[in-house]
Image (tube, rainbow, N blue to C red):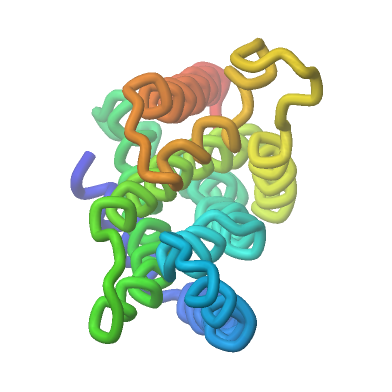
Length: 250
């Protein structure tokens, strides 16, 4: 399993597309971060001083940055692009049959590919997170809230990689896996409660409803369990799909 994870990790790190994605996403999010900082410095800070408000950089810059749609949509896109070829490329290239013929359990193959891909996505996400962390050098921020926000985004990334991995196991075309995974990730992200009843079925299924408390600095075991169960569900589905391919031939 760890050999497969290392192989997946090395393959992604050796691909120019991974570094291009990292550079472009870092540039776009740096621009977004600077826009939030300028807005805070020019518009919001004078008002806060005049009203003696307790709000600060953590609430008005860091929280909107880490929980904003630009970063979350980029995370969905990054997971889709990095995980789309985990199984689909092997099927298309004819190497999956060789891998399935090895004396390895299907769950070990899936977990190896999952962990290798997740490591790259989590590393990319950590680079984005370093931007608000850099503000610690010039102003006071809430480090616990910053860490909980990183945990929330890592958990969401774990679900997204599982979704795309399953999509990749269902097709021989990586682009189809990327589009399917991206659409499913956006659905999880944008599927929010539309009724006026809090804590209903829609809240239970919405990733946004479980991300929000963690991004606001409120740790709840129910929110953590949601992401772990969702990631586990798609990993199990990918394992079942791989077993099916093993039975009929890849």
